[in-house]
Image 1 (cartoon, rainbow, N blue to C red):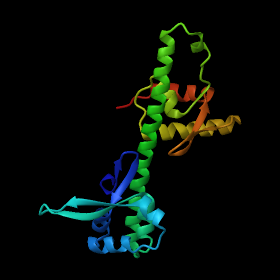
Image 2: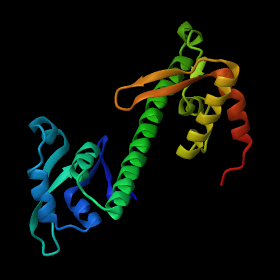
Image 3: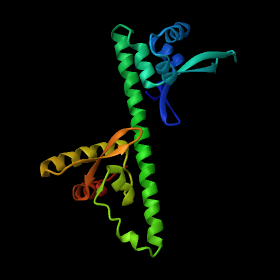
Image 4: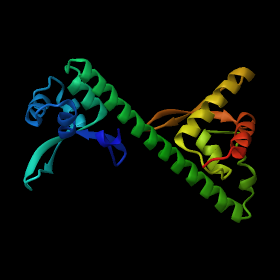
Length: 205
């Protein structure tokens, strides 16, 4: 799945060449289709970046780098059962890597918080007593308390448990704004503590 798309910087991208290969089309036809798309110049600028690759003969060849939106707009007209299957596979690949970026971004944000708290802990500044978190994201809780082995699938599973527990107890699920990925759920510590206590006792290989 991942070979269909790749992470470049903070974006998940594919190329016109990969699309042509996956859908069994001539690359020159995909290039022509991209260049003839009926979309705004702004949309084309943001979602189709002219690039190049080296072919088997060592020659430089033109290709386009596509965002997820660019890919979806391009393949909307591709017909047939197999084409539909390939579209779904591509979108799953995009979503998977987007989730990885989101996970890594949240982990980095929480790491900065933990490092800041460590600095406070090493000083005599009374402000360290003021910051006592009462709610966390799933990854934030694990990072703050040094809980290891939290994979993306584990985080998703624990998030579902926390959401269910909040609903059962009538507790509000807050959200943390994320500039790149929308909103991330934030749960009360009282909900996360027993969930992570059970998780921490579960053998992981």
